[in-house]
Image (tube, rainbow, N blue to C red):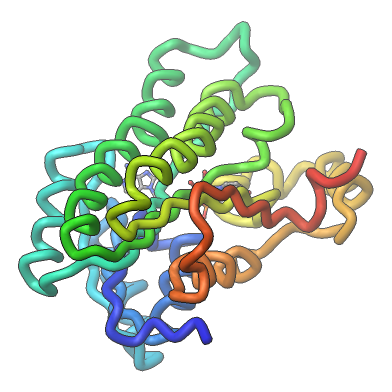
Length: 251
Ligand code: NAD
């Protein structure tokens, strides 16, 4: 089960955190994985590391906020491989500020990277997937789209829109053999949450609030990506899979 041999995957935001762990897990299941990130040097280092572990990986640097560059990179994969089976559209950014102090420019920047760029890249990929009659589109949502949280008003809105998008796209793409799903991680210890790592009051809150009483690790999220990418998830579409240590299940 969960064998991905012969599958071609693209993972955006793959030089660190959830993207890197998921790229590794997809590779371990046999997929050839294109790793995307903005920093070519960092990406090459990550790809070389996975390559040394015997995984088939290719570094593909581009900035997802540059929609033309993103679509061109997808076309490069299609030209080289003749197919793209799995797209884990995971790149995302955060900007923390109270609602009253939130600059409109930062609101628009977060919405562009986390939503518009994801929509445009996914739409381009979906077109190719429909033509090949098979595809797995997977997005990274968030539990901040399910439960209110102070200081993340642009981020939570962008993720909420992705949660809605996977349902709408499931309706549009199902007949083409393409499934569209999201994972909604809880608090995962990555660069994105660095501001919270050193906050001892947050640490205490998380321990009390989360039934499993700890931060998630990127490796806690990666198996969910493998599942959604696999043939075994063939009847799962339009779903948001929450992976949060139970945080959103309790009061
Ligand atoms: P991370 O900072 O390690 O990973 C984010 C990656 O996206 C980085 O590699 C970054 O370089 C890349 N990225 C950002 N903008 C990009 C762009 N324009 N083009 C290409 N790459 C870009 O943090 P992470 O926690 O692994 O984040 C991955 C995803 O998980 C994000 O979408 C984030 O919103 C989501 N998420 C994280 C948490 C958490 O607690 N860490 C919780 C819920 C959702």
